Image (cartoon, rainbow, N blue to C red; front, side, top):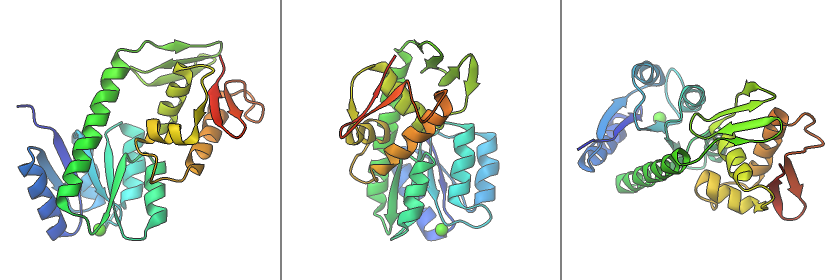
Length: 230
Ligand code: CA
């Protein structure tokens, strides 16, 4: 059987051990890193199928590492955060983590989250592979390579910015509410501030519109949400 590989980045040995145990028992191939530097050198050699990332880490912290990882890969990331570190959590999700668990968590819950994220990513890949590139007057969006060009030059989007743009552009003129976008792009609508959508829309506009304050592609539908105009 083709086992999925998981890198657990965790500096507390007892947590690393129990998490590793549960994940291996669930059929995953587990490696652990005890600090950010070790994690980065492991990730430079091989990107696993999923990363479980503690935020508070010696050497390089989990948020910095997540940002670095996002620049280099689309690997799904589950963040591990201490209770009440609301800001870390949101920052982690903004940086492209796929889900999070709060300490103390049950290892079984983490295993379920890992499975859910891997299922979602697998489904998205199948969907993406069956999709053709979208092309509009000045923009092209290719879901297979995740490359977006504006006036023929390639632009850099975060994973979530890409997902949101692709979703909107796949269904031109269809209005998506903020909750729908959270649900479809972040996977869960209940745990994240709807303001996140606004922030992502603003950044996307800055990257793809000729004039971000008079957008021609991503249009605000007041009191409802957003739509893509081709
Ligand atoms: Ca820690």
